[in-house]
Structures are given as C-alpha cells and as structure tokens.
Image 1: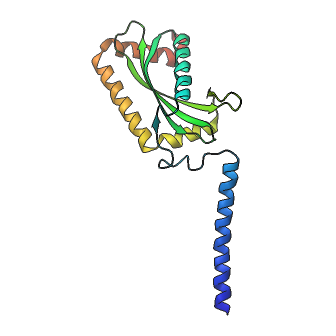
Image 2: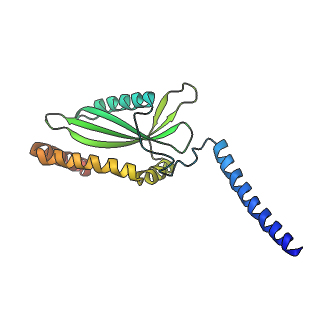
Length: 185
C-alpha cells in the first residue's frame, strides 16, 4: 500500500512538472513568441521565402545608396531569413555586392537587420537601433551552423575581391581610416 502511494506521488509530481512546462510554453505562445526560434533545427535559414519582406529589404538598401556618398549601388541583393523572437518578426541576413564609386570590382558584403510585420498595414518595417534584446538574439542565431556557412561564403568572396583588385584594397583601406579616425580627415 505504501509503495502504491509513493509511486502515485512520484507520478503526480512528474505530471505536475510536465503540466507546468506546458503551461509556461502556452504562456510564451500567447505572448506572441516564436517557440523554438533559437534552435537551428526549428528555425532554418531560408532564402527569399517572404517576397514582401525581401522587397522591403531591397527598398531599405536603395535608401542606403543615397545616404553613403561613396556607394554607387548595392547589387545582387539576396535576402535570407530566420524567425525572430516575436511572431511576425525576422532576423534578416542580406548578402549583396556593393559598388564603390570609381572602383570596378564590387565588394561582397553581408548585412544583418531585424524586421517586424506591422500589425495595422501587414507590411514589414526594418527595426534599427541599439536594442540589446535584438543584439543578444542575433548573436545566438549567428552561431547557427547554416548562418556560419553563409558568413564563410561571403568572407571567401570578399577575400577574392580584395586579392583581384589593388585599387579596391586601397579604397577600402582609405574608407576604414576615415571611419576609425574621423578627426584626422
């Protein structure tokens, strides 16, 4: 009889823990969080899966062209996404080739953005700023193997571009100096 009570109490305790965990997950889902988004298996890197989001990202880069005096254009833009922490949000990796004025060879690059779907219009908005929660999330997602592979591909393309064009190397060195030492320029 005592054995039945002990087994019953242990079983009830385990059931209670599972119910508590299910409740925690249900609360997170009700708050609009993407469950499992931090796990690579649950959140694979996808290319151009959301056409409206991809268009918003391309428009964002068109605006960047006008704001940076040395950039002639961003070409061959490819948009990769992972689910963001909240429902309707995405961590966006943007692969591009940047054309610098007066330089023939384009610079391969990779940008990271955070986008959220607007609840009213349904369109997407690029979120910028120094939100530490977004930065922390981006750091977790950037460690995923599929994102690391994308980083490696872009780094290889970048190294090849630099190796092929001395003028590009000089221009990028000048730009780096201008950013690192703005008072001297």
